[in-house]
Amino acid sequence: MTGSTRWKITVVTLLSAVGVLQPVRADEHEHTYTDKEEVVLWMNTVGPYHNRQETYKYFSLPFCVGTKKTISHYHETLGEALQGVELEFSGLDIKFKDEVMQTTYCEIELDKAKRDAFVYAIKNHYWYQMYIDDLPIWGIVGEADENGEDHYLWTYKKLEIGYNGNRIVDVNLTSEGKVKLVPNTRIAMSYSVKWKKSDVKFEDRFDKYLDPSFFQHRIHWFSIFNSFMMVIFLVGLVSMILMRTLRKDYARYSKEEEMDDMDRDLGDEYGWKQVHGDVFRPSSHPMIFSSLIGSGCQIFSVSLIVIIVAMIEDLYTERGSMLSTAIFVYAATSPVNGYFGGSLYAKQGGRRWIKQMFIGAFLIPAMVCGTAFFINFIAIYYHASRAIPFGTMVAVCCICFFVILPLNLVGTILGRNLSGQPNFPCRVNAVPRPIPEKKWFMEPAVIVCLGGILPFGSIFIEMYFIFTSFWAYKIYYVYGFMMLVLVILCIVTVCVTIVCTYFLLNAEDYRWQWTSFLSAASTAVYVYMYSFYYYFFKTKMYGLFQTSFYFGYMAVFSTALGIMCGAVGYMGTSAFVRKIYTNVKID
Image 1 (tube, rainbow, N blue to C red):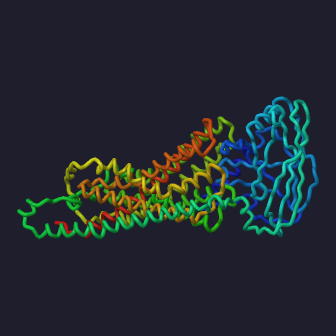
Image 2 (tube, rainbow, N blue to C red; image 1 turned 60 degrees about the horizontal axis):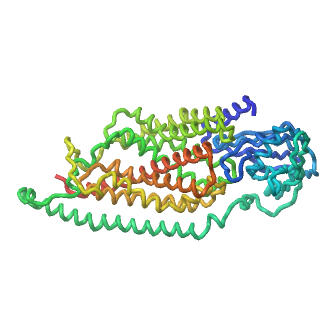
Image 3 (cartoon, helix red, strand yellow; image 1 turned 180 degrees about the vertical axis):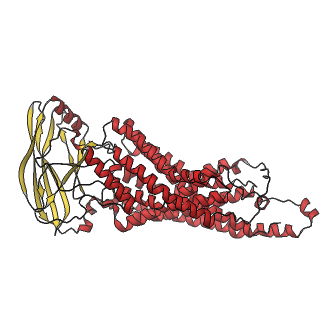
């Protein structure tokens, strides 16, 4: 695309983001055609079959373009641009229901450089992707003979398009016309289009791309059942703590209240009541802590909303729509970040609320954009299609400054004014109580390391399906499973952090805020460790670009998951701590 076209796309994207805060639909947004209306064949990417994240522009190989030079419409969504999808017009003249017999559309002057490029692509099993009416089509560049000495290029694209009424519901490509690659020859590229009536409904046209045998396998159901049993066990354990152990604690504390001063001094006082004057003390580094809690609440809101929208709208049927939806929902939920982060910072006595608001607003965007821009430089060096255009970077920055930041400011002001006043059930002592020595397994560092094991176990199998859908190009469509796993993850995380916090407070250690957050967030460490296993044993990726791309974005995913789990764990534990200290009699 030309520079002016790219900037027009950027302006349209930015206006769409700021104006309506909802994902724009793809180029063929109507998906309806009249007879002989223009149907666009888009050329997307080309790359090795066994390394599907390594993609390049289709015309980076010396393919030639068809005779048709102009089309009537085109625009690019933000999600497409961020995913490196930059569709290029094939130049083929295709009209709705208008059949085309085998027609030569261009010729390739095959000099030595072009032949070497094709030979390299054939040796590395390159395939390419195209789109017609948002339906993906794949084809192989060529093949080699049994000895690997001669290489052949497929020159004939035989398209068969199915239609139902005025809609396209099916596309199939057959590659024919095998031609030997000989330097200093001319190779004619041809195509044909055949239209056939189909009984496939428009709503079901993506079913052929789904893999029910993979996503609805028995192991998927077994993992859900296993996680559900874990939830029952943990809820039972927490209930036992709340109903039996705490009841004994309350009885013991009530008995101690009836003693005189001499008996109480001679008695064996211990337990979580002893730290009532310090348990609501502000956490260390309250600004960072509040910003993390606010960001985690926002990530949870985004995850919940996007999953619900995906369950209703089938977002996988539109290019880049999932990413576009996530970006717009994230921008729209910025007040959630400001509200929870700002109110918590005010409760902890923080006064530099503007700085806290900026940190909370830009914590996640800075992490994501920093990683994406770093990977982008590597993609530019490799001339890969994953490179993000500069105009798209500017659009994302504008969304951060002109949408996310103002909405975060609104949420922060509301949070400070509506729920920013300290209303703790216990008075905070002026002098911190010394923390007694305890057994090694009750240290916060040990609790943090062990706290993420059970939450990771509850989502372990689902991580495999999510990784496979992202890194192996399977279309993830079972969002009902994802919603159920999200609910299970939240319940398990809250239960685990409550148990950890109870034992920590019982050891008279009141440093529960960071401990509850980090013990839940440590789930992300186990997810990232699992990503190493998945990379080396489940993928065939190699090279600097693939390695940086995979581990860079897995680090972003794991960090966001950890912040979300940490916030959920802290919020549940905070309610638990407030509840138990409200019900005990404090002098």
